[in-house]
Amino acid sequence: MSTISIKTTEEIEGMRVAGRLASEVLDYITPFVKVGVTTGELDRLCHEYMVNVQGSIPAPLNYCPPGYTPYPKAICTSVNDVICHGIPGDKVLKNGDVVNLDITVIKDGFHGDNSRMFFIGEPSILAKRLSDVTYECMWLGISKVKPGAHLGDIGHVIQQHAEKNGYSVVREFCGHGIGRVFHEEPQVLHYGRPGTLEKLEAGMIFTIEPMINAGRRDIREMGDGWTIKTKDRSLSAQWEHTILVTETGYEVLTQSAGTPPPPAIVGTQAQAAVAA
Image 1 (cartoon, rainbow, N blue to C red):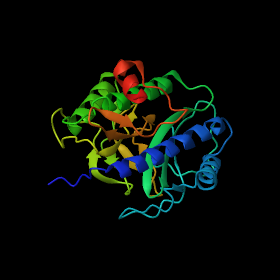
Image 2: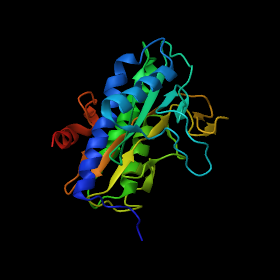
Image 3: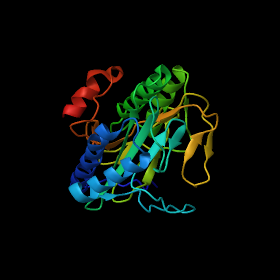
């Protein structure tokens, strides 16, 4: 028996608002992500913007799944070989660094969750290519979303594209259902076989957030209990959107004025769906 919740019209509207606000935090912080800033300062700016400007709540702050200590900050800042859940602090960003900022806000009880990659100064060719391919992976996954498709279809197209480009897919972390709860069913794996796992229905909402490594997929957990790095110290990249399954396809809920457009690889289909 599936425990995946189908959202009501009112819940979908709440999720649209939360998704847009989460994306607007990324728009707001973009000009500050540059050489010399600390990850802690980015966290402070985002936190103040959420609370004072948006009237939203930073979902990660004090978030505490079973077996974890409470997460101590408002956002996640994952730099270079950090795959996910990097804790902001006194790390100073320098030229050539790449950082993923993962933002989740709560507004009127609903969660909006998204992340983007940022280059500090001039990125290496490797870092730029890894980020671009990861962005394409996310969008190829999104483009598979429609009623009757399977979660395995999403994972398969992501895994194919990553591995075709010589990269690997992190398996320990995945996308997830989201709504009034930060992490709910289903788990959205970023690898898999077409036609497998749950069938998609209109009204489902979940994240697609592939974590792609330039080297091997193996991970290591840091002593803080949260930060996850690549075991071989290779670069990692991640992009994330929150997606609604519609009657005819999908709607990206985490959109705002500064959202990067879909990549050429997914073609006009995605462009049309975003405009809809």
